[in-house]
Each structure stands twice: as C-alpha cells, then as structure tokens.
Length: 229
Image (cartoon, rainbow, N blue to C red; front, top):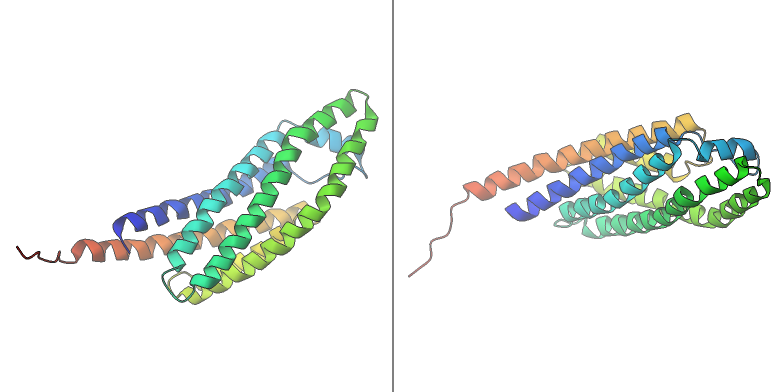
C-alpha cells in the first residue's frame, strides 16, 4: 500500500470515528422522540428546545462524515478477497446515509417552525408534522432495512479481514441492528446503540491505523530499485 493511499485511508478512518462520536452527541442533544399525533404539546416543546436544532445539525454532519469513513473502510479492504463484500457494504451504507440526510434535514428546518406556530396558538399546524411523519415512515423503514443489511455485511467483512479486531465486527453488527430501528425504541437503548457503534468504529479505526502504519514503514524501508543508465 502506497504512502499516499495509506494517509488517505487513515484520514477517512478518522472521519468514520468522528461521525460515530457526533451520533452520540446528536442523540443526547435531540433527546427522546415525541410523537406529534400522541402528544402535540410535548412535540412542540421538544422541537423548539434549544438542543433540538443543534442535535439535528450534528446528526447531519455525522451522516456526511460516515460516507467518507465507509469509503475508507472499503479502500482498506478492497485489496483482498473481501472487495465485493466491502463494496456491497459501502453501497448500502451510502444509500442509507443519503436517505437519512434528506429526512433529518427536513425535520431540522421544518419541525421547529411547526412547534413555534403551535405554541403561538395555531394548533392545527400540528397536522403538518403528523403528515410528514406518515410520509417519511416509508423512507425510514427502507433505510432501516438497508442499514441493518449494511451492518451485517460490513461486520462479516471486518470479521474475515484478519487485520481488524473481531470484537469490533460483533459490536458493529449489534449496534447496526439497534440503530437501524432506533426511532421506535426507547431513548436509553437507542443511546446504548450509539455508544456501541462508537466503540466498534473505534476498534476498526485503530486496526486500520495499526495496519497502515506497518505498511508505511515497510514502504519506507524497502530499497529503491536502481535505474540503469
């Protein structure tokens, strides 16, 4: 592996780890989900809280960084027999992230306005949030299925890599299944899922750094072939 490729893969691995840390922060800032159809007033106070919008922005940032991170993981695994498996995991994760970016972006900029109008006395506006929630259920279900499949595929690739920690493959699969269906879950299990995901990505990042560091040293110590004049 060349010096420049190793450096770029390392940078992507750091982006992967940073994305997982941002997911934890975003989940804490967002807080427990409130159903607008079941608790309109609670929903309005939730989406107008000082932490809701920053939490959504952190979540958007984490999704964008995760795309770079999954590209780096693919590049790390692509040189061996796991290239096809890593490619499938990369595609599924990228599609999932793209779907979630659309959903979270809409929620981040529309829901606080709906909540503000509701608290100002325009209570009928809550129907907009309910309609959005119903429309996006199809998208959320699609991404949940795709992300759970992506987590299983990537965990198998990590397990079989021989260079990355096997425990990180197990925690990645478990965290992926939890986070894929996070919205219906209570807040604490969802938060535990984000922490498990961060631990898993931390192990993967550490494995990538360790392996690429060895590759770099071998490249630097290898003799330069002489050129005939």
